[in-house]
Image 1 (cartoon, rainbow, N blue to C red):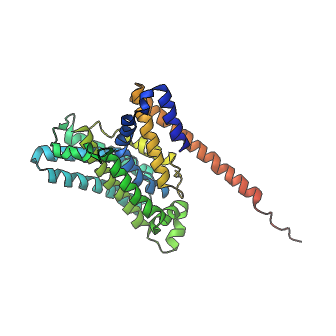
Image 2 (tube, rainbow, N blue to C red):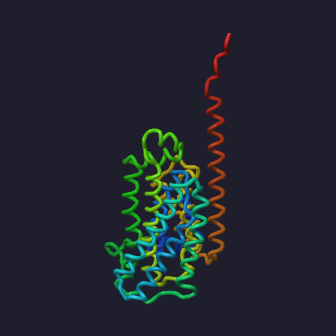
Image 3 (cartoon, rainbow, N blue to C red):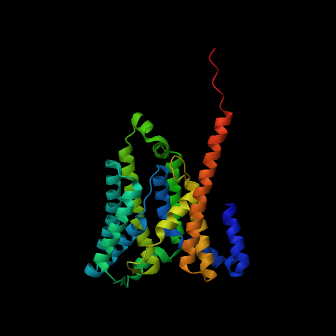
Length: 314
């Protein structure tokens, strides 16, 4: 929270217009897709896994939506097939990760290029636009005339994800898998089902985020989603979820997403390029990982000092 407030103050001093209510509300509007995916990513990273394919899952879901709508003219068919695309992609990741010993990093790196390739085969250099005005309303209306609906989606999902993460057994099992999966297995928990579920859930969130994204930008093309992986993962890590697994926070992810939104809007107002934004996120992510590693190392040293020495045998 201190980092978030500090960023708002810094950008406000550098560009006073940042303090305008409309600008601050715009921050909440642009984080919808990232936030939706970051919630599911928190589940995955808590288990010690990762999904590098999320941006391209979103891209493929968006391309399928545009292609089906252009080919059939049916909004219902386009929405259903786009959602199914995201779910199938997530399920595919989950099957490989839960049924084999292939690490999630390697699996999702491969499927990232697979999903990207399918998008290119379907659309090539073409883009799909001209969506009906009724569809655009899923991302352009404001709740009570003030709250951007994208943020409303994120907020509702945040409450649901946090409920299951904190109150239910799912959260405990996710942390247990990340800390020591074998212990969880020995306790009778079917970890493979949990892993399959969370990666499929990730796919569902990617597809939903794709629809929200399309409603805001009104165009499906193969350039969307390319940089979202970094933003989603950085938001989760900034929120305090351990990249090594075993610990996490949905509330922290919420703050992390807001930080990403403030950075994006601030850099836009200062006319910084997208490359500078991505570079900054990369630096932040690396710094966060180094800081976490140092903290964990210090904890281990402290625990060794506190633990009593074994009694000498006479």
